[in-house]
Image 1 (spheres, rainbow, N blue to C red):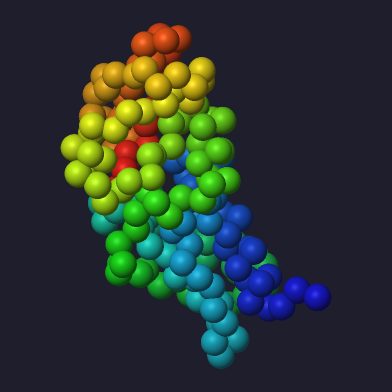
Image 2 (tube, rainbow, N blue to C red):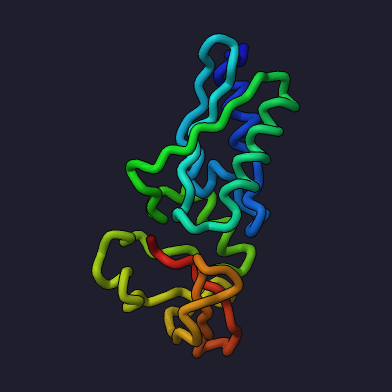
Length: 160
């Protein structure tokens, strides 16, 4: 039997990211937890970064998913600790790769990651021979790379 908390968590966890719809808020690690208090389901969310334009859209989508599942809902934005790309689940990383976005290397706090010295694996052919074309890709959280092996351009989800 599924508990009320598990049902609420499942409803919130399945919400897709509005910018990368193949991953959910749970895949990205921004859904911290869902708790039930006084009959209200409260979803705790941590934005990927404070300037992310999708923050409000994500919060509204999670609230709507909880309401559609039959809960009175509330969203709590949790800023500490700050989100890191290390919180992206393995399933989320594989979904990004399959979608053509190179997932971030696991080293969000390293100097190499912060200054773009990371070797990025091509999500299309798997080669580790890539070059940064632009610090900015299709969204601010991604950089544009090109694979030197297959010559295909691709987005890289930056380490934060």
